[in-house]
Image (tube, rainbow, N blue to C red; front, top):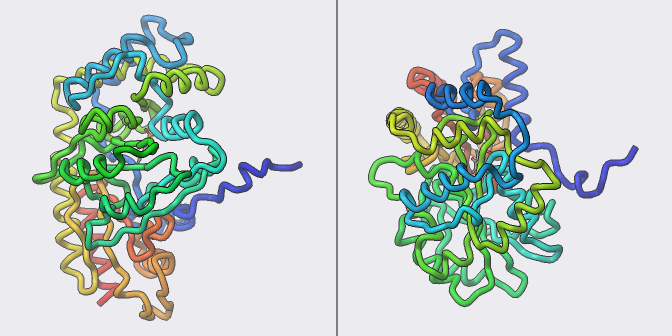
Length: 394
Ligand SMILES: *Cc1c(COP(=O)(O)O)cnc(C)c1O
């Protein structure tokens, strides 16, 4: 039996080697401390669960319009206006089955074979694959710690060619934990003026920002930015609703209409009772998100401080999301516990085998000098785990 060339080109997740080995070790009863989590460790707030239960009890268990129920599309449009200073009509909003699905659908609806997509490092591992599945080609823009892993307007301008169709922006960033300032984004928006480039702005970590960090939606920066941006967001990370599968896309009417048309034939509507729960979540007055954000902020601070206290590790204070992304490359070339550490893959594998600490190597994110540690876990877990890393490296 043959597998399509399209899917053959999709490799198994390069991050999976470490995570599946960690699971295997845990199953054997080994005390593994994992920093691999890509989702919040909190339960979904109770009022959201209750809205879903109420919806089920009311019999809201059938198909809805493919693009989402009108009340939810309106609630999302209201959210954009109130929180992001963005005016979208409900017709400009499509509800998807998670923001990952939003990214896939947005690319399917806008990219053609031969198109190039600018993809800054470090990038979420899903983007290169969804770009490929749309027939397009990723053009990677390298960044370093010197610019806080952000691209510059000069770099952006220099990378745009006749085939450039899209720029992918993800701020606050997974895995980098950084967030572009409004001024930095304005400069990028300016660099795009007069070009044909569409921006896919993945704003899933919007509500999880720390310290003095300010968040703005890329599309809100100017009329020009508004006209060329697909804004993607969802409930998974802010509301701790990863299993509910709800994301959404907003942008130019023509593109959103095309996405709705496509969705009709791919998935039909997002889960019906999830949509009703999402209306309740978006109208939250309980401060549930803020409570989780405060907790993440404390943990991120402790994690970065402890990492920076280790010789040869350099870690930015996280500005958003729930990841530290330290540069550990000064340890490459060493031999630890009999194992030669050449790169981030060796580093993560040896750390797991020798100290039972699971981290994600940076290479699959396009940043081979780094490792990713999630702080979606308790403070105690963070302190114990980083102690082990320090012992290992000293
Ligand atoms: C988690 C994540 C998403 C998508 O999450 P969904 O659960 O599909 O809504 C999208 N982008 C980034 C960068 C993420 O980390």
